Image 1: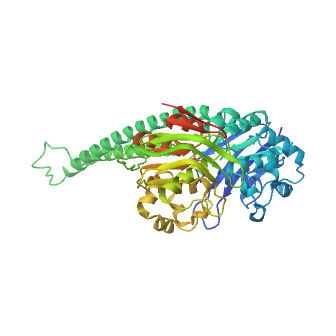
Image 2: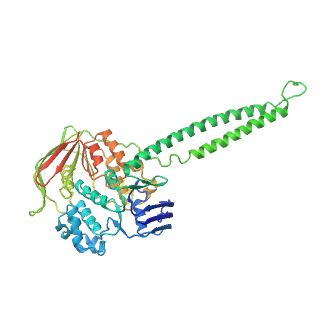
Length: 520
């Protein structure tokens, strides 16, 4: 058993106005299964990289353990190669037979290790890299959103693996994963850092009670301050009135009137009372300060779904996709309809064609090619979309985002001030708006795509893993938004709790058949 000790840590990126960490101190035990949560951009990934010694910082971080970090960074020249050729670069000393063992646990076929890495789906890439990570034995793992892009079955496998692991730090916004795997949680609040025993749900309940107490205390202090200010104001009026009564005083003609010395003494007492009240007001205000500093105020979002003149927006009949030349069959004999007002979620294993189906639907509706340089699969059966259908699309890939927010808005035809207002509602700091989007955190990049989609009036919203890297509080915002405005939605999303709350129907893609399930 050892500890990771953080003492007076201060760190800020060069050119940034504010430090991410300011004189932060805490300790964690390497035997803990530690969950790490907080809003996007608060410094979770940054802290993991500070543990790895990636950046210079002020203060001290001491640890007597070896770290391994996920996700691995894949060099561009390696993406066209099979993973077998570069896993030694990712994890020195990595043995292929151990990787094969972990691939089997994660439900991967062994041949994926010898296929071009770029040809694999995002989920297959993630699982393959997790197999490399898990092939070690004694490393203390720093896991940064390890289940992004993973299907539900794979998430369950990762969950089962982490349950058996001795100690790690897990950055995740997946509430189900955190509840299942961790026994301690480290949270970056708005103005403070706290470490608690328990899982995410226990922390959330404690925070709810703490926030409720802070609000009650704040309201009590506000009432006290208001009453003290009113009393001080009244005493000040009395003092001024009493002092004014000395004017025009004639002791000969007004012998029955109080003497000036008496009046002055009374005024002095009243003024002293005013000063005491003002000091109490200042003390109450100081005690009030900080009570609400960590409260998460989740703001209501808006969207403007369009009404289509027909109920049926799209339909598939006997539809299937497979790679050309007798390649892999993604799915076949798919029959479904998208009816206005439905919120349909696609489920299925990684590589089953969920994202490909979304792209095909988008291509047919807009006439814009969606596959670029990648191989376009061959179609079987038919997939039709309503004429003039307007679709708002969120891609799971954020790597194409670059340039300023102003340039992004100009390209998308969005009003910049309104776009920035939505980002602020999603808890992005305005200080970020001066940066290029490629310098944003992954969660912030995803919020850029979501904000653009929310500002785009559409008949159908097509979202491909919209919650990857998105913090828990923003997920709750989006849940409330969808339930309020009831847009027609076709989505791929592996967050179980989100899907259970939002979906009206699920469609499960399989190689040989398609299953549908009504959720509401």
